[in-house]
Amino acid sequence: MPPDREDKALTTTTAGRRGAPLSLGRAIIFSATNLPVAALALAISVQLPRYFASHLGISLLVVGGAFAIVRMIDIPLDAMLGLGMDHTRTRLGRYRVWMAAGAPILAFALYKLFQAPTGADQGYLVLWLLVMYLGLSILTLSHSAWAASLAKSYQDRSRIFGLMTAVGVMGAIVVQLIPIFMSKAGHTDAEGVQAIGWFVIGLVPVSVGLVVFSTPETISRDDGTRFKLADYARLFLRGNVLRILAADLCVTLGPGWMAVLYIFFFKDSRGFTTSGANFLLMIYILAGLVGAPATGWLANKIGKHRALIASTTLYSTGLALLLLLPRGDMALTLPAMALLGAFASGFSVMVRAITADIGDEVRLEGGKDQIGLLYALTNATTKVAGAFSVFLTFSVLATVGYNPKEGAVNSAAQIHGLELVYTIGPIVFVMLGGACFLGYKLTAERHAEIRRQLEERDAAYDEAAVLEGLTGAPGAVAP
Image 1: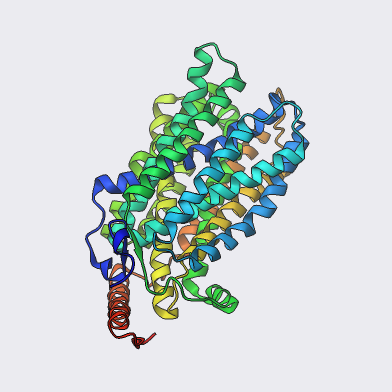
Image 2: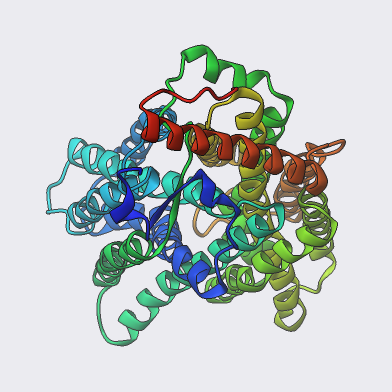
C-alpha cells in the first residue's frame, strides 16, 4: 500500500479526482486566504506609501524608488516560485506546504513595515518590501493553483474562483473602514495605518491555518516529473496561453488606469467631494460581493470566455455612459458605480478560472503539470499592468494639459481632456481584454473531454503504482 495512509484525510492520489466538488461551506473556508491578500493589496496601493512619507518622514522620491526597485525584482520572482511549486511533491501535498511556509514570511515582513522605526531608509524599505512580496506571492500563487486542483470541472472552477474574489472584497472593505473608525475614536492617521497592519497580520495565520488544516489536496502522479527549460519556453508557443496573458494584462491595466485618475475625475469632472468620491469607491468595491459569484454563475450558463466578453463589454458601455450623468448626482452615480464594480469583479474570476482550464489542456498534451508556472505568468502580467498604469496615465494626462497639483484650477478644455483620458484608455484596454477570447475553442464540452482523458491516465498511473507496490516491478504507463 502507498506510504501516505496516515495523511489520506487531507491528501489523495489522482484516483480521488473523481470526487464531488467542495461543499459551499468548505469552499468558503478555502477562500479565507483571500481576506488578508485583498486587504493587503489595497493597503499597499493606498495607505502604506503615504504612511512611509508622512509618518516616517521618508521623501516621496525614496519611497517611490523603493517600490520601483522591488517591482523590478518581484516580477521574475513569481516565475521562480511557479517553477518551484511545479517541482514540489511531498506526502502532505504540494501547495499545502508552500502556503504554510509563506504565512510566517508575510506576517513578519508586515510587522517590520507597519512598525518601521523612525529613520528607516530606502535600504530598509527595499529589504522588507521584498520579503513581504515574497510571502504574498507564495500565498497567492499556491492558493490559486490549489483552487485549480480542487475544482476539477469547468463549472466548479467558476464557482470557487467567484467565491474567492467575493471573500477578498470583504477584506478590502474592512481596510477602508479601519482608518475611519480609528479617526472617530481620536487616533491619528498613522495609528489607523498601524491598525490595518495588525489586522492583516492577525488574519494571515488564522486564514491560512483554516485552509491548510481543513482542505483536502489532490496529489497527481506526474507532480514529481522533472522539467526542462524548453518545456516552459514552449508555453509561450501555445495560443491559449498567449490569450490569457494578453487578456489579464488588458483587464488589469484598464481599471488600474482608472484608479490612478479616480479622485481627479470624480472631483473635477463629476463634482464630488473627496469623501463622496471615496464613498462611491467603497460601493464599487463592495459590489464585487455580488458581481464575482454572479459572473461565475453566468459562466456556467454561457461559457467562461463568453462571460468575460460580456462583462468587459458591459463595463466599457457603463463607463462611457458615466459621463452622461448629472454632475454631483449621488442618487444616479451610486447605482452606476455599483454596476461597474460588479462587472469589474468578474474579470479576475474569469481569468483565474480560464487559466485553470488551460492548465489541464497543457497537462494533457504535454504530460506535465505546469499550473504553478501558469499562475505565476498571469500574476506577472498583473504586476506589469500595475507598474505601467501610473506611467501611461500620467504621460497621457500631461499631453492633454491637465494640471493635477493640489489647488490648481483647470479650464473646461483641460477637464474635458481628463474625461477623455479617464474613459477612453480603460475602454480600449478592457475591450481588448475581452476580444482576446474571440474564437476561443476550450469550451465546457472540450474541457469535459480533457478531464475525462486526464482521469483515465491518472487511474492508469495509480494502477501501475499499486502493481509496483505488490510485485516490486515498475508498472508501464503510457505518457
